[in-house]
Amino acid sequence: ASATQTTGGSTATMEASQRARLQAANYRYAAQEWRDLARDSQVVIGLSTPGALTDAARAWLVTVASPPQMLDVRVETLSAARVLAAAAVALGGLLALAAVLWRLL
Image (tube, rainbow, N blue to C red; front, side, top):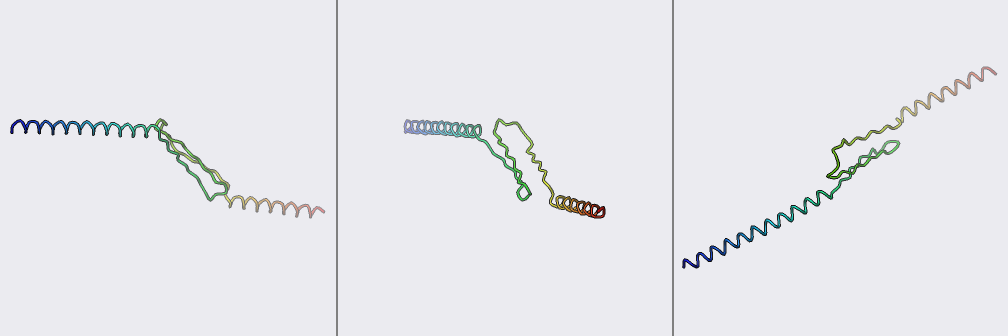
């Protein structure tokens, strides 16, 4: 009975050891897959400003090897109110010039 217990205990220990080695190999494989995925991955970040007179957009490609960077978008568009004000001033100036020229006739 003592020999059977020793053999059974030895078999259980060997089986547990083999399971632990297989699990460690699986973990190493999964870790390598994640490292490869992280190394080969890239992210495209896009910012845009729809609804303005002109659509402005910018995109950044970021990888693991990319240095840290500030993502900055600066957009300068014409203000509709300023364009209308400039057109009104120009029309007023044109009418004033026409009035002066009419008076000189």
